[in-house]
Image (cartoon, rainbow, N blue to C red):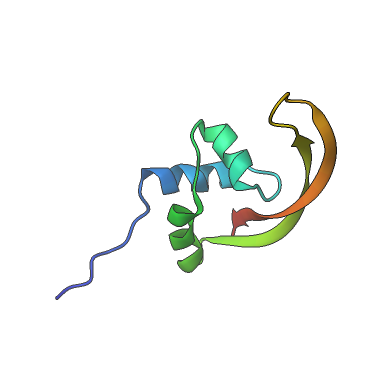
Length: 86
């Protein structure tokens, strides 16, 4: 059986294009904002496995918002992945 040549799907291509134009590594939330839909890590893991994308942990500040009234009651820090072209 012959091996099929792999190529990225449309969403992966779009993800790569966004990273190509980025000045620094981007989180999935930042990429999602640029492309207009939620980018999930599942489709990006293939790009990492192929050596096209690298990740590093980055710390971001998040607002703590009450669900009942929507008021901001504080801030916290969260560690998330940031993605860049390899």
